[in-house]
Length: 158
Image (tube, rainbow, N blue to C red; front, top):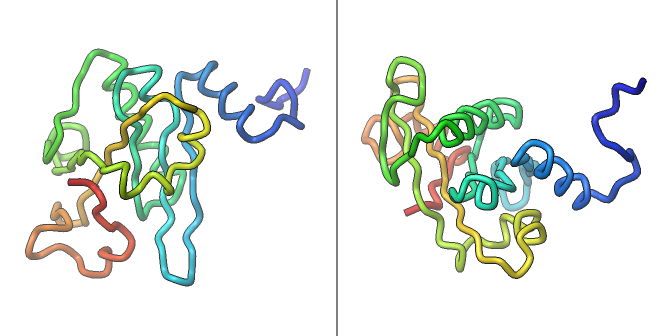
């Protein structure tokens, strides 16, 4: 028996995404950082809209494994019947640290989510940005937010 998770290792990338969404309900698509111009890496979901009727989620500035862990918490919460309001909220992160879920204007940022666009085809889909706090529980719009994180976590949501 093979330990390979895909039924066919030679599947095209979009077919792998479709298979993972069909099997798991969603998948995480990491995008590597770019040097010129400096653009942080990010990870976004594919399948939240179709599986949970919730906008896809994007997280900037975390390693893909960390972003996927946060996304997994969001997915479990939504799948269990929970909701996450737009704007700032507490209760999902340890120690009741604040976070935010901000709607993204797809007319400005659709090019960041090419895999989701191919997956959804002609169907409209939504994206929201999960904004995480710095070590002191500050969010990017707070006065004392760690300035070193501003490039890592641009705020594209409203």
